[in-house]
Image (cartoon, rainbow, N blue to C red; front, side):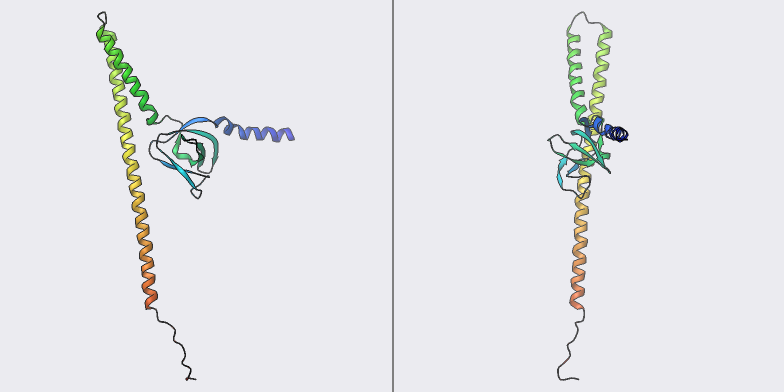
Length: 191
């Protein structure tokens, strides 16, 4: 019986043990807060920028996943914002490196006198593909950055709006309290 419970316990723990320490990335679309626990009611430890590399610890509770961010801080983020796909922030240097390599190879091919047309054509197609990939990655990064700026702007506007509503309600209550009739005291000479 004890072996059965030990086997069941190992099977339940194994997915989280396999996921611990695996690479992951914060989704490119936003930045998010790193919380001290699995929920928004926990203290904010800092923020993690879009596309930042993280380490997944394999622990999830509700809609939150435990991670270690690029600064070594351990905390919780929303699971829907974590992806195993490489972020554009990580892809961009690779694409740039590939573009530089292809340009270098193209220059070498053009400078050599015994160069054939097929090799030159291949290098040109590699260069154009790398340039398209770089342009696409840059465009998506710019779109994500503008979307992030809009989200921050909307959050600030909502905060000011809620503050204005609270102030208006307080003012209205203050005005009402001033004009409420006060109870009269009985005069001592009356029965």
